Amino acid sequence: MLELNDPTLLKQAILVGGEWIANTGHGFIDVTNPATGALVGRVPKATRAMTVAAIENASQALPSWSARPAAERSRIIRRWHDLIVEHVDDLARILTAEQGKPFAEARGEILYGAAFFEWYAEDAKRLYGEVLQAPAASRRMLVLRQPIGVCAAITPWNFPMAMIPRKAAPALAAGCTMVLKPASATPFSALALGELAQRAGVPAGVFSIVAGAAAEVGDELATHPLIRKLTFTGSTEVGRSLMEKASGTIKKVAMELGGNAPLIVFDDADVDVAVAGTIASKFRNMGQTCVCANRIYVQAGIHDRFVAALCDAVAALKVGDGMAADTQQGPLIDDHAVAKVEEHIEDALRQGARIAVGGKRHALGRTFFEPTVLTGVTQTMKVSREETFGPVAPIFRFDTEAEAIAAANDTEFGLASYFFTRDNARVWRVSEALETGIVGVNTGATSFEGAPFGGIKASGIGREGSTHGIEEFTELKYVCIAEIC
Ligand code: NAP
Image 1 (cartoon, helix red, strand yellow):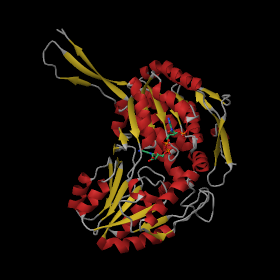
Image 2 (cartoon, protein in one colour; image 1 turned 90 degrees about the vertical axis):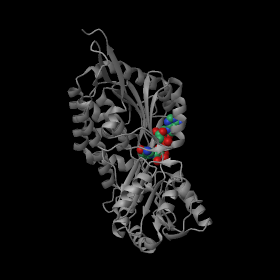
Image 3 (tube, helix red, strand yellow; image 1 turned 135 degrees about the vertical axis):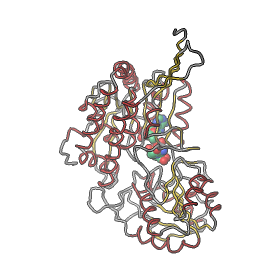
Image 4 (cartoon, protein in one colour; image 1 turned 180 degrees about the horizontal axis):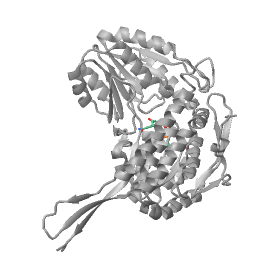
């Protein structure tokens, strides 16, 4: 039992063109609580035909939504924000129940997500075109910024309440409509957002939610000709295949994909700041974040002090059900996630790494895992090459700045990186040298709705957040007017 103040926020139905469908005749997704195994609820799976209907509804809703004055769209999006904030505790209960993260983290995620609605409610009114200097007195030249059209969004389970607002808020603010497919592990967070969208006054068809089989629903969203933009957050592997599919109808794509973030601790770092930053980056959401530190490079002169302090901090992390007040680490999302963590640890140990803290499944059972520190890690190990997506901090030792930068950049990924130093010249040098879309200096937490979030290399295309995030949902139209005088 979730004990919600407003039980109607737990929607066991999909949302198509403003109608809630509780039984699609196509089976159900059983959503379970990873901490307890209890059934949270059942969501009907959308059929391909329902996905097409949602897209067509979005297309029909587009002209009137995009024609509304920006201030009107802004007011509706602002109301959506206010409702999310008003219901933050219920939304956090839903999120913790289906995803496992500690309640306080869930609350933080919801408020972070809500901030995108607030930000883009404001930005909706500030989407400007341009008047160009014409080459002749008889001409006027304009650039219009127009909504791109019907958008499809596909989102992951690790931040279900943050990844959706980063897409839906700028899209609707720009005048677009959207059909969303949330992750099957965490559909209830998305559906609660859909309920609040309706209460805020988002018109029927402007925002639909089709949960269901990825291959069926996702395939339709990636290939349907009415969809003009596909915005995806998830793994690089799925992103690559969606890009291929979207190429058939030349859709604009935005891809927020996997990461393999390096975190570098230089000799001149403040150890306490570096440890706090590493805990924040590595262990948030039990290490299941795209921007979490996957590889921790520590310079030889500070190595032993840093490792000792990090081990103390990691050993003190409280593991438990996310609804318990003192829990800092919940369960991992499922058995596959635990198997990957175990595989990475076994591979590292086989190649000579050592366990300094943790290293195995937690005594609580299920998918709980001990927060872990590995030392003596090298570039050939899986923890270095792939995203572990779990609570494992692998420590590499290095000697020179050049060596650390080369190792940090030695990956196909380029989402986030972090480093800790008190040398201002190094702050500039290393920030410029790291091949990532985001760099955190003396911090492990960089996300903010007003900053552009996104990766380079195999970590993706496009940016979310900030004024750049809304521009991604627009097209530029150049208008050349001749014979004006
Ligand atoms: P995922 O397996 O790629 O799934 C993401 C979404 O894609 C889910 O909604 C999933 O649906 C759907 N999907 C899966 N296969 C599909 C297919 N063949 N066609 C269409 N849709 C498909 O990723 P995940 O395991 O949920 O999330 C973890 C990954 O996301 C990590 O790699 C992480 O780094 C990345 N991530 C990146 C960012 C960023 O901003 N760069 C943020 C968060 C997470 P089902 O759930 O129904 O399978």
